[in-house]
Length: 431
Ligand SMILES: Nc1nc2c(c(=O)[nH]1)N[C@H]1C(S)=C(S)[C@@H](COP(=O)(O)O)O[C@H]1N2
Ligand SMILES: [Mo]
Image (tube, rainbow, N blue to C red; front, side, top):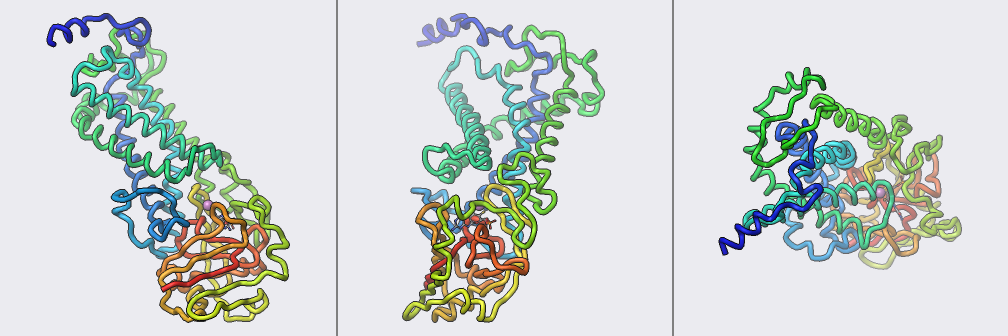
C-alpha cells in the first residue's frame, strides 16, 4: 500500500496548470486571500440570515400555495410567525440580501482567483483526509457559485431553472453554508495569522515597483517562480473595492425606491414606472399574467367565505363600507421596493368579522388570475389582525390601476410583495 502511494505521489504533474511554475502572479498569497476571505466571512452569514428570514417571511408552513419546497423537514426548524412590525422589515431584510449579494460578486471572484492554483493541486487526492477536504471545497466553491448565479438570474428575471428557483436557492443555501462553516473552522487560524503577517496601511502605501511576493506558504498560493508585478496588492484590493462600490451605486436605488430608482441601472424592471397616483413599480402587469379588463369589469364580485353562507360584494358596495388608510411599501423578493404608498380599503380584520370569524387564524386569498405562480396565497392570523392590513381599493387618492391590482388587492405590513395578491376575487377565512 505504502509503496503504491509512494509511487503515485512521484508521478510528475501533467503539463499546464498542474505544474508549480504555471501560476506566476507575485501578489497571490495568504495575505491577499485572507483580506478577501475576511470580507466574505462577514458578508456570507448576513446573506444566509437575510435569506433564511425571507424564507420565513413567505409563511412556508401555511402550505404549498406559499411554498412548494418538498421535504424541507428539519431545514424548516427555525421558522417562526413572520411579524407585521416594523412594517418595513421585509423591505430592509430583502434589500440587504439582494444588494449585498450583488456587491459581494467582485469579492467572491477575487477570492476564487486568489486560490485558483489549489484547484490544480497535484495529486488531486493524496489521502482520505485530503480527499475529504477537497470534497468540502467542491461543495464550497460549487455552492457559492450556484447561490450567486441562481440569485442573480432570479433578480434579472432570467428564469431558466429546472424547477423552482425558490427550492434550488433554498437547498443550495444549506449545502453552501454547511461547506462554508467547515471551511471557516479549518481556515480561521491560518486566516488570522496571514492577516497579521502584513500591515494593511503599509500595503496600501506600497506601489507596483515595491511589490514583492509573500514568503512561501504551505498552501502553495505564493508562486514558485513569480513574474514581475504588474499590479500592487493595493491595486488589487482597490480594483475589487471599486467594482463592489460601482455595483452598489447601480443597484441600491431599486431597494430605496422613489426617485433613486432611476439610478438602479442593473434593475430589470422598468426604471421609470410613470407618474401620478399609480406611478410606482409594477412587478407583473395584468396583461403578462392574462388578467383581462373583462375579468375585472362590472361583472367582478368579491366573495368572502367564513362561517355560514358566502358573502358577495360589488366594488361599489365595498367602497361604501368603512374604509381605512395605511402607508405601506411593496417590497419584492427580487430586492426592489417602493417607498410607502398611501393605500385605502377595507381592513382584513373587518372582513373576517363580517364572515363570522373575528378570530380567523388564516385566510386563503385567490385572484381572478388563471391558476399559476402568485395567483393565490395564504396569510396568517397576525397579518389579518394588524389594523394596517387591507384589502386595498385605492392608492394615493385614486382607484387602483389595472396593473396594481384593480379592483382590489392585498397589502399587509412587512409582507413580501409576492403575498400581496393583486386582482383578488375570493377570501376564505379559516379558524
Ligand atoms: N395575482 C397576482 N398578484 C401578485 C402577483 C402576481 O403575479 N399575480 N405578483 C406579486 C409580486 S411578486 C409582487 S412583488 C407584487 C407587486 O405589486 P405591484 O406590481 O403593485 O408593485 O404583487 C404581487 N401580487
Ligand atoms: Mo415579487
